[in-house]
Length: 376
Image (cartoon, rainbow, N blue to C red; front, top):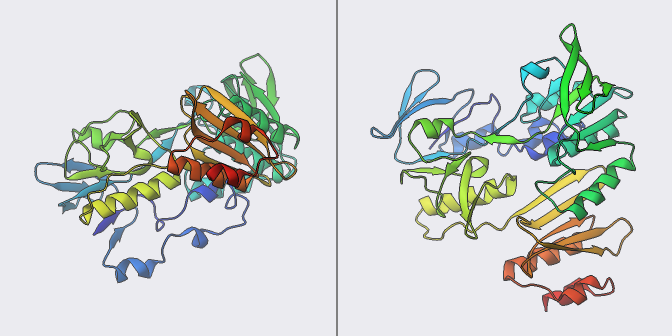
């Protein structure tokens, strides 16, 4: 087996980059999936700082960035996604403007996290809000702008947005929703201010951009595979070429009659394990059981299921102070739960989803109901 890796580092976990790694509570060696010796011990040739530049599907051969070629029987894409950046025309190329995708991004940003400095976060999704939490924890003045009507609009209910908004505002973060960025202003190539869509200007020292990602599917597209902001695969992870598979953030997969891209480490790991089993002879398709999490300050948000297309939510107070859960329904069917500092709600919701059970709405709404009873 050969792994082609574009980064200079051995494969590592990415979720902590915008949390504990950025706070310097974790080091890179603790993020590594495996030590270097493990790869040679398992007969895995891993080539770092290398990319694939071309795929010849007829010859079953790839060309590498160093000019060499490799043949393959089976090829797997795990190319992930790339953060969208602000255009240079509005100051996106100024020093002090960052995205967080790899450890080098996080290293550079960590040096900027100094008490009293002013941070602007562009984008109110999970990545932006996690970065905002870290910046505020470091003593920075933080402003978050979100072009949509509310933070987390693409990924969570209005109820969850309201809860998370209050978490940040109670810690001094200035959240401005329905607010776009007109341009960044610089001095000697370094960002110094931001002009917002309402005509106001705010001074800034650091800008963190969290406006989504684009799937890394260009190589697959150039090779003639079917793509659509991601590499389209079937329930077995196969692309339009049966010798080529795709997994993780770069893959568009079938799920409950829809085609979706699940941007989560859980999906990347689970789908990779399923495809490995298929390559080893399994006939079991990959059936995603989505779950996600986000750490912001001392708050843990755990999500089970996928709230896409929900038409109703139910907010349930938790048993501890500060704990609450938001339950999602679509046409009367339970489809997801957001649990804020409420592990019991998360575990219960996850088990209900695994069994396809919709809980009794009246019991769920009653804070005196023991959640375990919903599993009976």
